[in-house]
Length: 184
Image 1: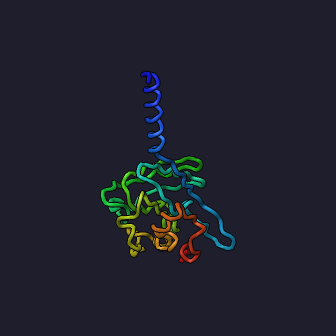
Image 2: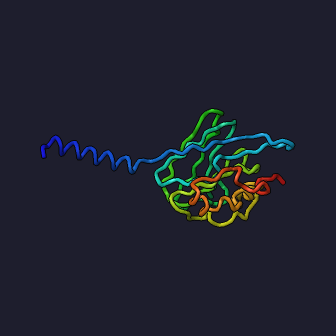
Image 3: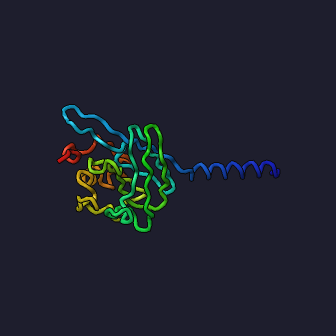
C-alpha cells in the first residue's frame, strides 16, 4: 500500500472519528405568548425540558424581549439546582432576535430561570448526559431565594422528571399540566 493511500485512509478515519464526537448545538426559544381570557401572558422556554450530551451547546434565542438564561446557583443567592462543581452562569438580558450560548460540560441536571420572568414560571430543566445533582430533589422553597412563585410549580411538574426528559429528548411547554403554570 502506498504512503499516499495510507495517508488518505488515515485522514478518512480521523475525519470519521471527529464527526462521531462532534458536539451539537441545540436551540431553546425564549417566549412571551398572550393567552385568551388572561391578563398575564405566558413566559416560557421552548423546549422547557431538554436532553443534551456533555460538550453540547445550547443557544438561547429571544423570540420576545428581555430574557435571561440563569443557573439556579447558590452564588446567585438562589436554591442550588445545578450539579456540584458547576460555576454560576447567566446570560445578559438577550434582546429580541438575538441569542446567547452556553456549553454544558458537567453531567447532571440543571435548572435554569429567566431573571425578569422567574415568578411567572419561566424556568427550564436541562439534563446533561444523565440525571444527577441537587435539581433531582423537588423544589420546596418558593420564596425569592428559592424557585420563586410559579417557577417551583413548573419545575415540580411530572412532565419535567429527568427520566422522562432522557426518554423523550425534549419536553414542550405545552406538555406541562396547566395547573403547574397557573399564576396564583
